[in-house]
Image (tube, rainbow, N blue to C red):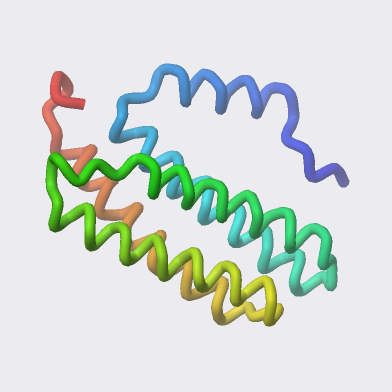
Length: 131
């Protein structure tokens, strides 16, 4: 079974990203990071070190994009809180890879899932014009 997404899935994701609002893009980043972390856990269970490492690397890249999207000019306190969460997630991912630890990877998933839920709620409550 191939781990590469199908052409249709890639096309769908490309379309979703290109047409997404800024809030939706943030949610998509969380979803992508969580998906990669879950893939890493499956690869860990399978003993696939290369696959685990690749998935964790992609998750780290996504969290790096979340860090890069922070803008302290708009909400410095919230930005600082998010940055602390992202640093914790990055640490969990790195330790999970180094120690082959499902618990560390799961900790990263839990934090990202809470943040994803919060951003999804913000997106849901925003008027269409503000998105």
